[in-house]
Image 1: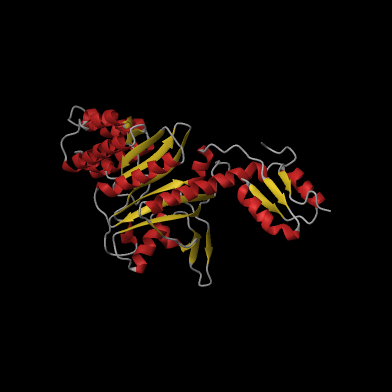
Image 2: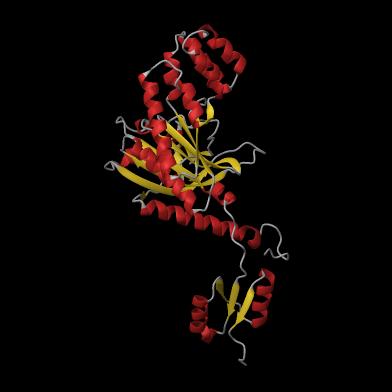
Amino acid sequence: MKNKNLPNGTRDEFGSQAEVKEQLQIKLLDLFKNRGFRKLTTPVVEYSDVFKPLSADNYRPYQFLDEQGETLVLRPDLTLPVARVMSTTGIELPVKWYYNGDVFRVKKRLSGSYNQITQAGIEIIGYKGLKADWECLQVALSGCRQLNLADVTVELSQAKFVEAVIRQLPLPDPTKASLKQALFDKDLSRYQSLWAPLTGTAFEKFLSEWPWLFGDFNQVIKIVETLPRAVEVEKIVKSLIATKSFLNQQFPEDHVTLDLSVPSPQSYYTGMAFRGFTGKSADYLFSGGRYDDLLTNFQKVKVSAVGVAFDVDALVERAELPVDQRQTLIYFDDDQWELAESKLAEVQNATLCLSQSRQAAKQLADSTGSRLLDLTKGRQ
C-alpha cells in the first residue's frame, strides 16, 4: 500500500523494486552455484581494446584516459572481460564461471533505454559440442522458472548459417556480399534484383522466402530443406533440430522459434545463439551463444566457449512485485536491547527503531506508514 504522504521517488515507490531486484539476483546466483559454477569478478574499468569485437552501434562505451594517455572504458559487456581474464591468467581448462555486475553503455537520447544495466550470467569455457549450449539453455529457462516467469519464447539463430548459404550460391563474390547486406537491411527490392539470375534454379524456392525466414521453427526448417544438399548447412540444421527437441523435452510449456534471416546478435558469435522473451514484451530476458574464436583476440590458441546472460533489470520489470507489507518499528529503551532483539526475530518485516524518544518514534512510523511496536509501554 503506497504511502500518500511520500513524494514520488522515495522509499515506497522504489524500495520494493530494489528488494525484488536483490531477491532475483540471489536466486540466480544460487542457481549458478548449485549447478557447479564458480564465481568470477572482473574490473569495472578496462582498456578499450578489450571490447574491439563489439558492435560500435549497439555498445558505445563511456571512455576516458589514464595517466599514460591510454583509453579506458567502463565495461559495456561482461563476456569479453571474462575472455580477457581467461587468456591472461593461465587458468586450466575446462571451467564453468558465473558473474554478476553492471555494464555501462551510452544510449541515444529519448531511446527509453538505460545507461547502466545489471547482468547475471554464466560462461562455459573449454567444452565442445551441444551439451555446453544446452547447459546454458537449461540454466536460462530454469532461472525463469524459479522467478515464476511463464510463457517464455526461446528464439534460436545460427551465426554461420547465412555465410554457409551464401557460399553455395553461383554468383560473383561482390554480388554475394551485396545480397547478404540487402537481406540484413530487409531492402527487398534490391534483394530481389540481386538473386534474380538464380530464378529457375534449385535455389529459387529458398531465396524467395529468405527475408521472411523467421518464426515457427518447423516452417523455417521446411524452407531450409529446399536448398541443395550442403554438408555445412545440414550440420547446422541437425544441431538446431536437436536443440529444439531438447528444449521441448525439458521445458514443454515454452515455445521455440527460429530466425535464420538476421545477422548474428554479436559479431564474435561462431555458432548457435539464443534469446528468451515473454509474451508481455519484445525485450529479451536472457541472451547468449557460442563464441569459439573469442579468446583468440587475447591469445593464439582457439578455445571453445559458450555463455548466457540475464538482463536483471528486464526480469525486475516483468516480475510481480510483492504486496507491500507495513514494516514494524520496534521502539525500546536502552536497557531493553535483548528484548528488542527477541522481538526482531519474532516479527516479520521488522526493524529496530533507534529514535531517542517515543514521540520521535511515533513521528517516524507515521511518516513511513509503519506500525510501531512500543516496548516501553507501562514504564515510567
